[in-house]
Amino acid sequence: MGNGVDWSGVAEPMAREILAQGEKFMQSQLQAALAADSRATSMAGLYITLSLATTAAGAGYWDKAGNISALLACIAAGGSLMAAAILAAWAARPIDFYFPGNQPHQWFPGKMNDIVTMIGGEAENYDERIAYNDERLGENQRAIRRSFMLAIIAPIAGCIGWALPFICSFSPA
Image (cartoon, rainbow, N blue to C red; front, side):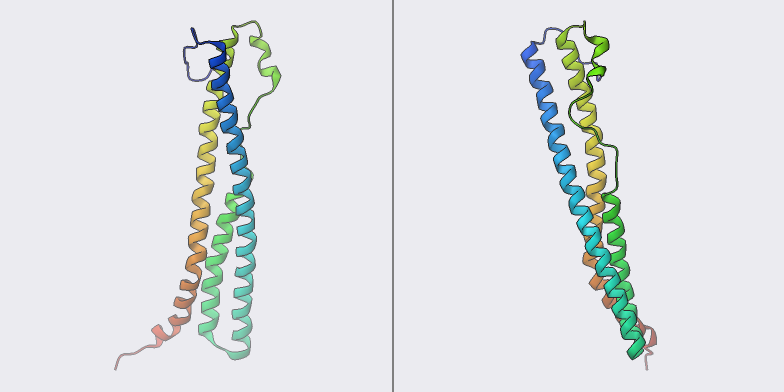
């Protein structure tokens, strides 16, 4: 079981409190994960919509006016927003995640064992599950941060795309 903590001599109320704290922490992780998934899904939807609208506007303007600068600006900004959408969608992907509690059958083999040792072992299991959940939440948090950065960079990318034809056609006298 778990991390090999010596549970001998631990009072049952203390073992139960340690387990209860692990359950509370895992429940909080679950709530945070659900909120993060909702945020990531909303961001992905917003960014994909903005990306498509920006790219379509640039294509429409280019079709009517033939302005390559506007087209490149919209493609650059739309591309940055598309990358932001992809990262946000990745952060909202289905992942393995541990939940508080466990199936009763997992305790059946040890039903005749010392209760403190069993509770302690379950607390150790929670500790491992919490660490695993933290890793998943951290990965998704980093993806959301990158997504925000790409969305913030989109107007800058658009300005660079707009200026590119002018920069490339500039010839010093």
